Length: 348
Image (tube, rainbow, N blue to C red; front, side, top):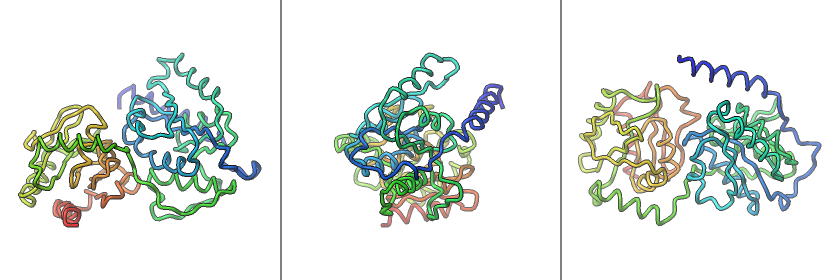
């Protein structure tokens, strides 16, 4: 591990220890909530990764559904949030935490000043383990503050509770039930980039130049970060099996921003740095196959049937869901199992 990574690990550990006891989501002394008075909500998820931005879209949809007249500010890192939430009408301000706070101390402190200056009715921390998220809720002047954790001794029993896009919604519903709002047990919303009809139509035009529009289309993404990335030989074996099993289907590769390919660019390729453009192309495929990554979540948020491949990350926590999507554990399953999963989607 590099010295920089060691410093970051130490910093995160220190911040978690300093902030773990900040806040209490118990609200029994506040009294019933009047939905009509919730006009401004802060959602805290200070993380800049594409996947993590997409994974909070179900919570944003939940808040918008319960409080349809409210405006939502999101507290994040990086520059992807404006892209992800471009079509979300309830989103108002996007508050950015600097990626390197110790090098940008002025900007760092301005963020907390801005949060403090806003008149929020409710503040929500998405991840209870996020020290910056907890601090964001603490700094706000909101009457209703949810720090992301359940009261001690409370366990919510849902078969899909472990999923990182779902348990914040389940926890938030419990929080609201304590201030007089009934939990109607509705299904959790899907990840959603909210692509417009025009974007999807443009994605089809782009895709039709790459593949044969008369055939069904399989998109593959052979890259991922760190240990999540499968080696060249693994992908070569899988890609060969795909070609043999689906000779009458299009197979094309979505390339990462690094412009690399684990199959040596043997398939037709699509490359773009525009997140919404990539999503618009994926919205037109019949199935997407790729390892756990931001692009896998982008496929899911674009409503493409998505086959997620998992080797090191927690499948129950990150697997794609909805639209016939499925997560596969590649430690216990083999290529024939992957082929079978793809067939199950295409044969619907």
